[in-house]
Length: 347
Image 1 (cartoon, one colour):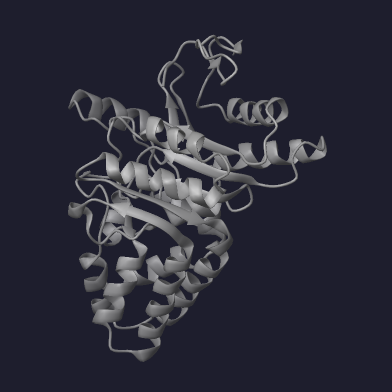
Image 2: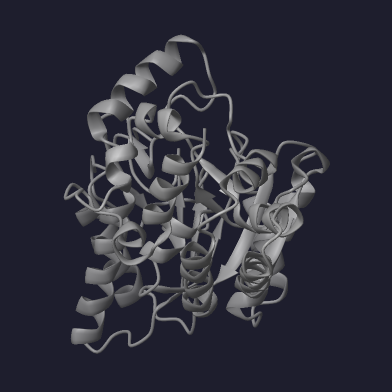
C-alpha cells in the first residue's frame, strides 16, 4: 500500500527487472484494477487465472470518510489493523481504497472487455483476498459473475499474510493442479503457517445460489422463537468482536448449528439444517487455529441488536435504500429484511 510506482513483474525477469514501470498508481482506483486484469490476460495467455488482492480488508463496504477517520484513530493507538474498512486495498498515498462494489464492477468490466476482444470467455478461476475479514457471503455474492472460486479469511490476517513461497512452490511442483486444488493449497499452506488467531477458506461460487436460497428460506420460516434465535446468535462464533463501533460477521454454519440446537420448531430446525448443508457444499476447504473453534469458512453480517446495528458507521450500506456503492446481497437476498425483523422482536 502506498507504493509510489507500479512495477509489473513476471517470471520472464528473474532478476526482478520490471516488465513495465507505470509510475505512481492509485491502488484504490477500480480502473487500475480493471486495467491490470485486462493487461495480464491479454499479455500472458494461460489456461487458468488467479487474481490475488492484497492489503487491509474489511468485508463488503465502508464510507470513505469513515474509513479514513477510523484509520487515523486506530493508527494513533498503534493497532496493527489500522486501515481496515469494508472493502479492500487501501492506498495510503492517494487516501483511497476499493469498495467491494468497485472490485465487482472492475472485474465485471474487465471480463466483458476481454470477451469482446475474443481474449477470454470464462470467469477468473480464483479471486483471493490476502486481507482481513473478506470471507463473507456478501463478498462472494459480489463476485458471483466473475470467478469460480474465492479464497479469504473470516477473521483478521497476520501482517505477513499468505505464505507465497510455499503456495507458489507447490504450484511450481505441480503446475497442472486444478483451480480447486490451488485454492485448497492456499488454505492449507496458510493454515500451516500460523499457530493461533487465524482462519482461511476457499468457496465454490457455483454453490452460491443454493446457499443464498437456503438463507432466504431460513429468513422466511424463522419468524418466531426470537429469544432462542437471539441466544443462538450470541453463542455463535463472531469475528473481530473487540471493535467499539463497526460490526463484522458471525460464522454462518455455527449460527445455523446453534439455531438447530436451540429452537423447538421443526420447521426452523429443518431450515437451519438445510443451511448448514448448503454451507458445507459451498466451502470446499477450510482451516482455522485451535482458538478459532466455531469457524467453518464463511461469515455473514449480523450485529447482535438494533443499537449495535445503528452504531455501526456502515449500517446504511446494509439497507435497501442505500445508493452509494450498493451491496448486491442486500438488494437481492432476504437477509437484511430478516435482520430488521429480528431486531424488532428481541429485547
